[in-house]
Length: 579
Image 1 (tube, one colour):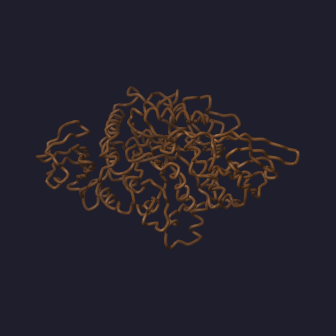
Image 2 (cartoon, rainbow, N blue to C red):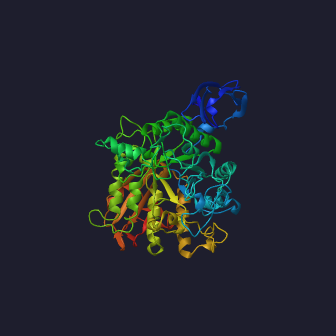
Image 3 (cartoon, rainbow, N blue to C red):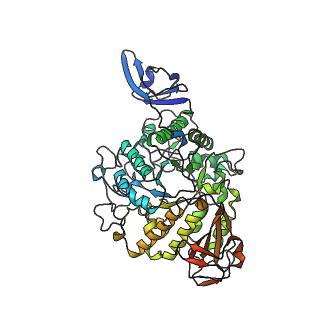
């Protein structure tokens, strides 16, 4: 690998009192670090000339001698050339505890702090696991997505609310209630067999309170505010605010996310190395294709930039998307690599989540596109500001996810025409689309009712479920209508370079209709959306520059559409025309 230094963090009773040597023929022990806590010892090995081999790490203390076998393994052929997710992909977001239960025997693991499964309580564990996901990989592949993003799978040995995965207690082990490390590797392999990439959620900002790092702290500078709970202000704009105070910046970045999540100090060089090395280990070990970094702006800017560089140095075609939950495009743009807004600093973060666009989509598809800025005018205006982004095609775009209300906040609000219009936009505009499990069957939930409700199980994922929505027979007619619509568009989009690579041109909405073109290598797709709840008949003269022929195939209906005459729209109708 490109990185010549290997960190071995050793934890054991007064291990720092030991003398250490290694028996490697190729690696060299360059540095032995003893911290304030004698239960930790950090070894730095030079592996620039390493070969695959097994050797011993020997600890000697007086007459005591401990021998630990260690192995440097042969890399998988072509590992460095792995292809990360791109705008050619569509990510399917799954919370493992809430998708499907394939192995009830691991619902409760003796000795772990949260020792119950209760599907009636939204914040308890519900029993989903790797086998449940594996059992439904064919469903996911058939849907037409090309990648799966898993909410965190590493161990969360906490007393309550451990189901979501964001309170890490062991960076190197998956949560045993999902399965074993080997089970996760097999799940990734099975996904790859079906043409599905895998994106792994990681958290560098904090750990769970019961991580041994916090229970037995290696040093006084391993955590921020190590002796008391100081909550972050959540105001991460202090990372780029030219007028910020030092106080506000420190509280935002060093404060704890919540009381159960102590804040790691990434400015500590040993913490930095540990996190960087762990992420690269997961790429190699589990053969994943991408990383989503949680709470990216809450951690130290410079360390996170070096992490991005380190990963991309090993895997030049890889991708990392950072969660930068900011309410404006300027703030989001600051976090994308090579941003002029951050110069001379550089985050080196290839992709960022486009939260401002998502927030717009919660309103515009219900509004009337009229006046100066109603409805789809807001989408047009927002995209017209893409000049702030260095690479709009590497923005992760989404209608909902595990942290926000589902696109439909209640079953009463479900409208199939709005679903079709929003889905069409998501899958044809610039960026990397992500859909949240259950969107395809119109699952509805409001964040006001609780986060656990946003993350309830997929119908049919549990033995006691009354119906199985993984099958057409188990879905309602309306659910099948939604499923079949998004499936058709996903399969059409798969391998479609016009959408994956094409330039975007759009027109100011006219008489409530928003028109835009994607074009690439002489081919084009033109999308026309009626953003009103009334019928329309539209003269197409003003759109002639994107209409090279007098007829085109409509992807949605499969019909040939005559473009010589005025085009008729029913309320909220969408055309996707291919040229």
